[in-house]
Amino acid sequence: MDDDTGLGGGARLFVGRVPELAVLDGGRARAAAREPCLVVVEGEAGIGKTALVQRALADGPDGLVAVWARCDRSERDWPYSALDQWLRRLPPGTEGLTDLAALMRHASAAPLVVGQALLAVLAAVSEEAPLALVVDDAPWADEQSVAALGFVLRRLWSERVLVVMTARTGSQAYAEASDDGRSGQGWRGLSRGVARSETVRLAGLGRAEVGELARARTGAVLRETEAERLMERTGGHPLHLRTLLRQVTANELTDVSRPLQLPVSLETAIRHQLETLPGESRRLVEALAVLNTQVPLAVVGHLAGITPCPGPGTSTRHRPSHLGRRPAHYTRTAASRPATRRRLPGHHPPGAPRPPPRGSRRGSPGGSLGSPCRSRIRSGRPSRRPSRR
Ligand SMILES: Nc1ncnc2c1ncn2[C@@H]1O[C@H](COP(=O)(O)OP(=O)(O)O)[C@@H](O)[C@H]1O
Ligand SMILES: [Mg+2]
Image 1 (cartoon, rainbow, N blue to C red):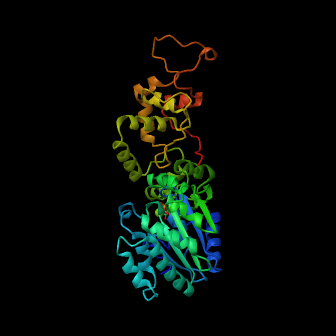
Image 2 (cartoon, rainbow, N blue to C red; image 1 turned 45 degrees about the vertical axis):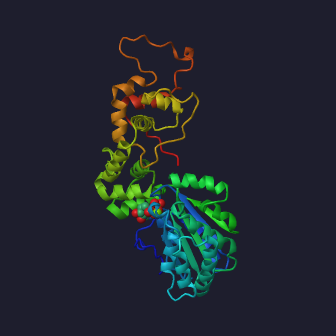
Image 3 (cartoon, helix red, strand yellow; image 1 turned 120 degrees about the vertical axis):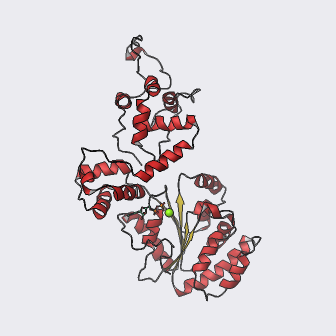
């Protein structure tokens, strides 16, 4: 039953994440010492939330039993669908389990009543061994499961229980949950009822881990510049890395004179996503891909040829998520388009009067770009600036 994720990922190669594992290990130790607690793991899609929790809850000398509920958008409207997954993974003979399952089959069953029965079942199971309850992709958990879990969390006292939730940032469900969290509702409000809770925010892997993955996957032992290039290309994003490493050879990784290709599946996914966007949105994304830096939104709008542009001074913190970052194809094609080039600050059609010298210009429309940025756009080359995460 341990590591019962249904993902079959227990034996996968895993690198890094030492501090994050320490937080989860701490939660695990506390649960074993009868101090129930909650750990929330947040990060963008593919950053390694599920892999981290799988790793942290793998078999150990404490005999911890881990039961998983993997939440999915398609089951969000199915009452108790998340709790139902837990129940199916608990030892079948547990006292009260059958009654609880029957209770949950009624969509109208009150979450507080279900919560009370669940608390009794969890208390019984955790007497046998410490118990880890995982809610993977919690923002997609159904409302009733969250309400029942809230009831349980407010009442856990000395049970050997660790609750772990993962949450994909950047999704609409996550954004909605942030609002709910402020009012104490939804999964975000759950930590309020728990005496001990911690949040782990996952960013990309470090250069050493990127090199380790590359060596394990391709056999290439990367030098610093080669690892740096792979870092810059993928942001240390594990899913991006693994996808890329499946399609490149050791030689391609170590030959920095040739560009690294975007993983085919990623390029196709980005292309499909872009194709579903309205024209103006697509041009905005293209302009962002060309700029690949933080500039006033008005500049992006100007470059994309969108009018009216948002007011001057409106800064965009939005940068393409790293899965969409530096889509080289778009950067090159968008930057080479005559319409984009014409709109670049500092572009002058042949024969047109030159603008006054720099100091005498006042408030160019939509703000200004630094000269490295301008020359990058003209050359169609993406930024070499390492991304900040
Ligand atoms: N630390 C890591 N070491 C090696 N591979 C990893 C690591 N973290 C994630 N991965 C791999 O990256 C992919 C995406 O990870 P996953 O945990 O599914 O992301 P998330 O749950 O955040 O969407 C999986 O193939 C996973 O095995
Ligand atoms: Mg996941």
